[in-house]
Image 1 (cartoon, one colour):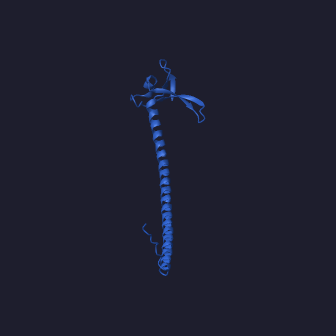
Image 2: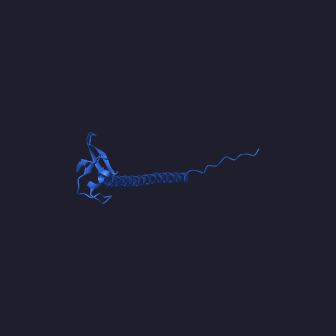
Image 3: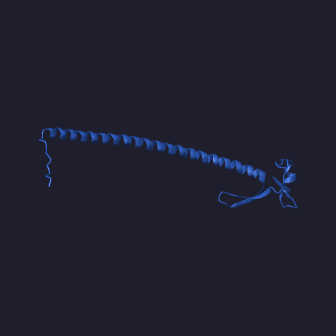
Length: 140
């Protein structure tokens, strides 16, 4: 990819054959003089330096943009998956709450029915008792 170094800038002269995206000329004519032709340090996964490279900032920006878009798409997919999981959890809680409410209503209804039966039984027994007279107060 690289040939000799340009004396004025110290940047390597690119091999001919490709066209510069910015200046629309052969890269061997313009890259070594361009301020967008940047040096980058290459490293492996552990962070160890493995070399140096010169790249066009326009090309690197497009590559970084493409990688950023891929990352955002992956994040969006993960968030959608989490959103579906949360929605499923919410639906399960709503179903459990509805079931619990139905059980509670049934229990309260049964208890109220029992109380009404007891009150009716007491009222029936009260019919056979002599009426209770309230004591009369004497005016002083």
